Length: 287
Length: 264
Image (cartoon, rainbow over the protein chains, first blue to last red):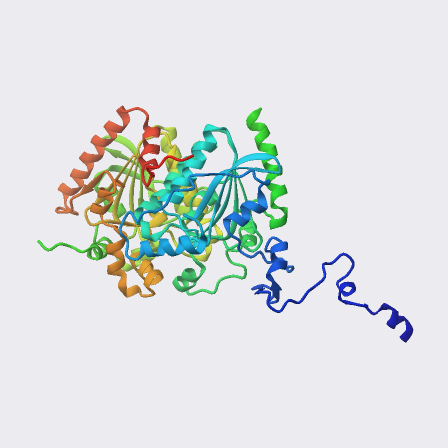
């Protein structure tokens, strides 16, 4: 059967990759990212083309603007309160410098981006938190922007979609940060009592005061696969209780199992899922 | 008189000899009947709640109880509520709303319980639900922070019309030790963190996060409890005679950290 084997041997790389697959150019200079799940190195361009999801299914973190670009209809996003910035209300040691670094590294003025948008033609108010800005922590400006968004949504009878990613309340604004949990929750409640729809999408990681407030207050809560979502940090729990944590502890799948999220939705299905939910609830609002 | 540093106050607030939640309940109110359980999963011993009389008037009282002796403190999980504790509190608050009783909370916790079970049963969700529901609970709520006000675990019983603090109570977004170890990788810098966090009652008053600071000169003595009883009675009268309770409660939190610039 040597003859047959010879015939079936791929003639080139293109054929080896299968029909329709993009030619694999090994550009030595192209940066690669190692997947923490499958440990393979993937060229960054390939990750980008796949919404920053590894072929193994691992969802890499993405920044707020990337996410807005992925999820909203082209040119539909209208940003609100883009110029609000924290101004170190407590004179906390080192905070000014940290804010400056965060602004430079994230290219955002604060840890959340808010506005109105359309998703597959469905209008909504949208907030997306930014992990690159002090781990998406919530200080007065984050609390204020999200509160304003809910108040705007109530006034204009709109649904709210929120992507959470946060280490929790921002220490450097002390109690003022803590109070934002109550303030935002109040605005969410008013919006909810107005019969309006709020969808949260939990992304990696959502913890602390954000989990203990608006992340868990959605009418429907979906999560990205593998996202860490919890109140107390896993390391802190391990140290305090001196118990080893169960497998998959505080992962999205763990929350699903325990009844705290409605569904896990992969990144590439999110726009369709969100639009579908908006279509159902936006119709009820206008009826 | 020696001026206490913020960290001195943290240590004072944690002192196991300080009056605990049950001390306030038993000394300020009469006929306290404890009501147990969240009707979902369990009864959390860190949260005590029930019905009592305040100067003859029925009220719902909820307190985080730390206990005094080591044995008591162990049994009360050192005053760190599990989700069941917050759910029990919410159940009793809804009951208070239904029967038009005001709610009085005594808060003293280093924070919500940190454990595997607490996460499995939705610690974050339980706190979040209290924040939302308390904002529109249609009956007056007064919360008094009597010792430690540890982050979300304390806030979950403090979305109130009036929030008061004892002079040496502290209220903070994170423990000073936790803050120091995260920011400076050194828990020994807790005193420095405490100063930066602005966690004293005076700080909270300055930033309009509380309405009143209660002197501790006579702490634990009959006159101390009588003073609190009198203040509660008067304040409830005022809250019950006023209108727009819920709008004012919303505004109370709405203005914290409100930015000046208007941009839409």
